[in-house]
Structure formats: structure tokens, C-alpha cells
Image (cartoon, rainbow, N blue to C red; front, side, top):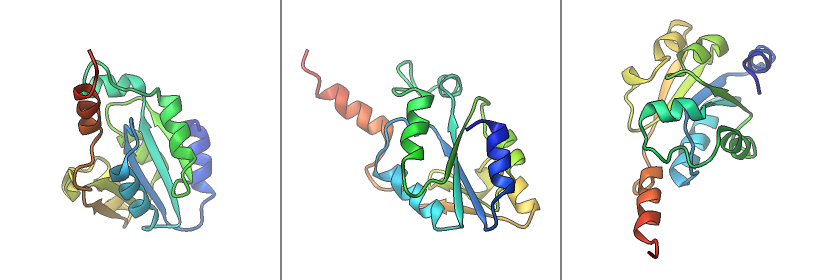
Length: 153
């Protein structure tokens, strides 16, 4: 959905709205754990997805993202835990958090509550920051490394 559609969606929600964001390049159990944990923290979950250009600026590697932003958003939108998906092109989701004014912001365990971009915006409105522990052995970087090591030359 567009940012305008996301703002209208947010305005129509009655219960606590939860926000999380990420690349979600190759969906794995760690992603699902964060998404289901995020969803359980409120009535609705909106996910911000890094655009292809922002992923490249994050320095995740020359071959990233593997999937296009449209493909990543489509897959996320098909998950039961996810109520809405919006792509952002900025280096961080701060502008999107300001627009959506979520009640809860969620990130994975590689963050601390104080390192979550937008946490101050959420807390200023009386909201909270939730950190979901990382799922051991689950990472997109690890999946890519495993695929590379199993290639037949």
C-alpha cells in the first residue's frame, strides 16, 4: 500500500497498532517469530519493508536484495500475522513511524529498546518498545552463505 493508504488504514484502526520493519529478503523462522511476536502485542500489525534502493544503501551485499520489494511485500501481506504492508525508501523507517504513530514498535533481539529507530516517537505518545529474542541459527545471511557453499561449480 502507499503511504497515503497506510495513513488512512492507521486512522481507521481501533485497537493498538503494532509496527515493525525490515528487509525480509528470504523469509525464515526468525522472521516469523518476530512477526508473530509483534502481532501478539496489539490488535493490528503493519510492516514497513525496505525498498530495494534502501537495502542496497544498507550495505547488505552486492547481490541484495534477492527478492524485489514488491515480492517481499507480497509475501508478507499473505501472512496471517500481518494486517498491512508499506514500503519505505528512506535509510530508516523514522518518517514512516512518525506518519503511522504506532502504539507499539517491535524489533528483533539484535536491537535494544534504545537503539530502535522511532522508539522515541512511540514512547512520546505513551507507547512501548518490544524486543523479540532472536531465533538461534536463523538469518538471511546464513541462508545465503549455506546456498553459496552448496553450489556445484
